[in-house]
Image (tube, rainbow, N blue to C red):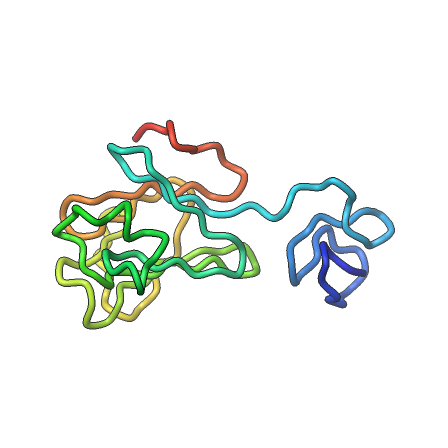
Length: 153
């Protein structure tokens, strides 16, 4: 079978392509008009700004525009956030995790009340709050969940 533009092969009877996560129809091919695999969304508390992490991608969080181009604009004025602070990964299997950058995050990273050790990834769940230092919080919205720019929390 083939998913949306990929050529992955796998066992019969699965609902989604294991490589690109596209929904598969009864014939084993991607369902026409089906939405692409959903991204994890990180919503900044207070501002409503958000960043998305698509399947198979890694998002860098920090103030360094060269290292974290997607996040730097939203974090530019946040002096408690390091230039190279954390990484959020969205695995092909749909799971997501956050990792504090070793020797990068001066003020640390927390997931809810758990303090992360530098270089060690922490699984993320829908509804978690990731803290970059003491003041910047991001609400984690799992794939398929509304939690857009106007989400509160």
